[in-house]
Length: 73
Image 1 (cartoon, rainbow, N blue to C red):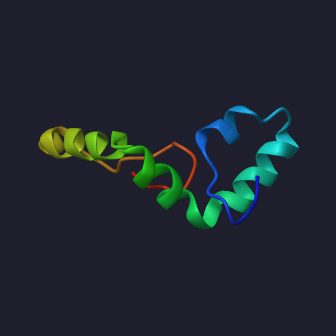
Image 2 (cartoon, one colour; image 1 turned 90 degrees about the horizontal axis):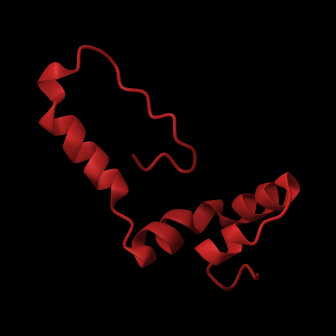
């Protein structure tokens, strides 16, 4: 892995230790949305927003996003 080459999901699946995860995501953080979301066609966050909007009248309080990552949702 090189900072000049975009990271991929394969890099994430190759992690072995918590320290590996900390290093990878620390280096990937600045370009994660571009590298993963845009290039992989990731759309789950859009589906979550659509579902919330569809049921917004039934939501009586705040919504907590308990995922991890960049907070795209």
